[in-house]
Amino acid sequence: QVQLVQSGAEVKKPGASVKVSCKASGYTFTSYRISWVRQAPGQGLEWMGWITTYNDKTNSAQKFQGRVTMTTDTSTSTAYMELRSLRSDDTAIYYCARDQLVLPAAIYGYWGQGTLVTVSS
Amino acid sequence: DIQMTQSPSSLSASVGDRVTITCRASQSISGYLNWYQQKAGKAPNLLIYAASSLQSGVPSRFSGSGSGTDFTLTISSLQPEDFATYYCQQSYSTSVTFGGGTKVEIK
Image (cartoon, rainbow over all chains, first blue to last red; front, top):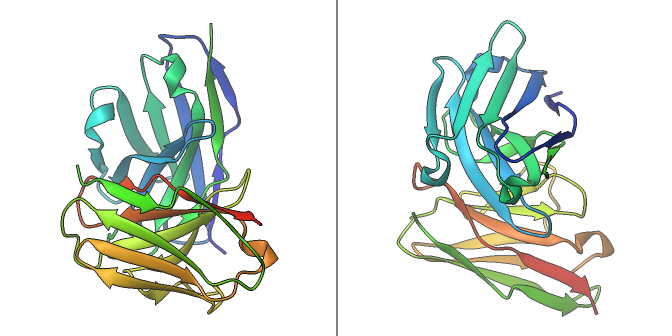
């Protein structure tokens, strides 16, 4: 069965960087795009961007451009999201999500369990 | 970016009630609209995709409709396990956006 297992919670200081991993199993990793979505405490869902896993092409929300890097390691079927210059309002649960369909359509049928990133001095 | 506006932001309903949640896009998104359910402390779960297609394994009491700018999610007979927050999401644009969410609470 499809599984996305994310790395554990992180506590970071303002100005630092965080790198969250998302290890995929149960399917051919390079056949489906991976996206990243975050959710601040008590708030809604915010799309951050996606990475096409067979060629590492990325697309990110304008809000995060210049601060976010999405990569993959196909040898371990793992996707990564690095966010730099962290601020207190980056405190959130970060989710990875997989497209439902092989044809990229931003329909998120599978989600990781989420990774809590806390930014605090 | 395409703005997605959900209404209401919250509602109280009883088991057995018919519940309708609305999502409006700031521009036409054709039928590129998806609905998710999120329970407290859990990741979102896909319910409906492409405006009206029921995700495999999702109960048939959930249905979606609409096209262009106006969409609805309907729960025909609310069950205890349906109390959650619901989000719409447009997949028309390469910059994906979510609605603000609708929290369905027990009356």
